[in-house]
Image 1: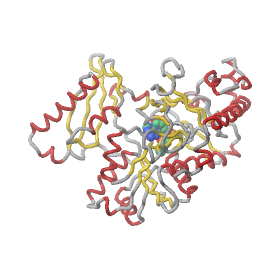
Image 2 (image 1 turned 60 degrees about the vertical axis):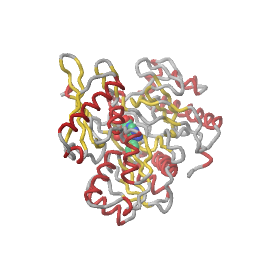
Image 3 (image 1 turned 90 degrees about the vertical axis):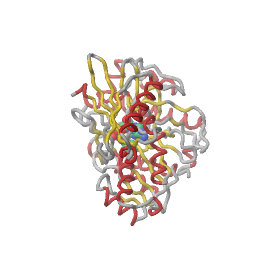
Image 4 (image 1 turned 180 degrees about the vertical axis):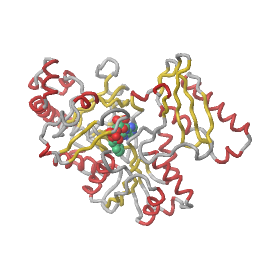
Length: 433
Ligand code: DLL
């Protein structure tokens, strides 16, 4: 289902012309209104009027999370607070949060892009959206909420947590759509089972899941457990919130990034060089419609690639591949780079283990070591010890065969590892403790 035919299927040429017009406008605005940008462009000896083609974008300097921190809280805003109707913030693990602001128009654009995203997942009027993303400074809850209302669907603003009540409501209100993190969705599925509720007792048909990396194998697991289509939604507070990119139900392969609002680039994270479509690297986004806090070439730290091929759904906005992980979360184990999502894929393909795991990284004698703790199914757990040992050895061997590294696998009792209501925290880095 296409929400806005004109904008979503716009011929590339027209779309790129629109991008260029908006980009010029935006660079001009930030140069004149934000001292940070004026200084940065001056330092790089580039003037806004020198941006003449989309290719000139790469002459502009990057913006980083640190820049937002240095200008905490409102230093990057282009408008006075009189015109800022909302703020959100992303927590981060240390120090001050990153603060973002929205004008009335920013909220309207965000709601529209979220409405488009819902529609791309087959959601429309008459659908009941159980919005289990957290409400608050986190953008997930309110972002999905406003988009759902804009679309004309019915939104249940339940937020995350309170799992048993959540399930009662899901059943009684006949929710058709679940918006939540993949890890909370797993927790909901597990609780349903404990409560003796089967998927046929529910009206759920789609899950719009994101805010954290998850694998294709995890998708299959969730779809199987809940009998739904599970679609991937991407976004980040600095750029807007949820709805920056979305998978379409038609292809379920890669996420369309709304290019009339954002210009994506993929760069080599080491050198900053722009890579060609199809090459894997760090996603960099320039916002071209935002009023309060437009960002020039924001380094997301998220690793993905741009899919060049047009999509069968007819949308002309390019797709990015499912996010592999954040470059900060990449583990370097004896010189081999590995993302937690790669370990997840492997675990989820292994019979007898549950989709609950932890990665524990430590440094022993100057070498990084990885321990994978994974829950086993009730059945395996009640089998003889030999079975458990075989399973453990099999996973260790599979990791070695695929990635060439030695890791340690430990088996955890069913339901013993932590469950999550929002974003999962699966990596425990003892090197940083
Ligand atoms: O997580 C916004 C959001 C809310 C997206 C609800 C989707 C659904 P932040 O808290 O600022 O914003 O975190 C942004 O989360 O840079 C990625 O590293 C990660 N992330 C978000 N969506 C995905 C996804 C929200 N679909 C950071 N796959 C981003 C992988 C994701 N990682």
